[in-house]
Length: 112
Length: 113
Image (cartoon, rainbow over all chains, first blue to last red; front, side, top):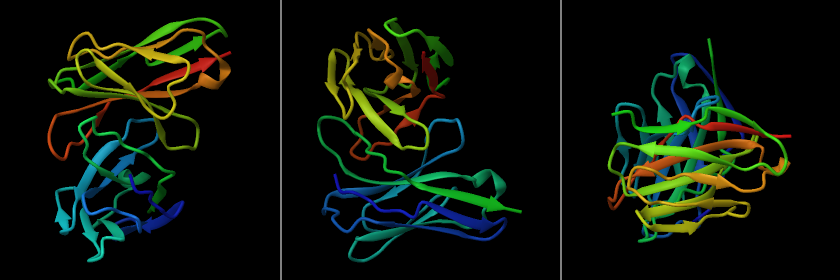
């Protein structure tokens, strides 16, 4: 599975959009981009995933560049409860299970 | 649905003791996983299972054992606890889809002294 690079930390003002970048320059054509987040002392929570098209759900939007070498997770109106560590993961499905390889992630602090 | 449940929530072990961390899911998911998370670090995969009776090693399997006799349960066994196994342990499960997502339990905090 391809490796990802994320900034270690970011700040965002409450009510503003939070844009979290992720580089995955070695991504393969059949690898998906997943985003999870982990609020302090809780288990990780799935946010969104995509292959090459932009995706949107009730939590966030995922923008993947045309060359697929980077992506951005967008929280459109960040709240204090969005303060968490955000993990960008790329992986390919295989018949041995959906293993997730977590990196260091980005610690997002939403400030009032 | 309760989702993924883990017991105990917290445990202190002495060096050399053994224990079993329990994990149960009620979503009929075939895939189950055990991760550990050290302070300030991302999660590392210990073991995983693609179905009852099938298990395989992850990144950091040494010092652990697993079994999967039913779809619902995936216990993690520590035979000889060591201080290096002090960590937070998360169990997760996912369904057999082409692009699956994992649902995580609340975690078990383990301290080995």
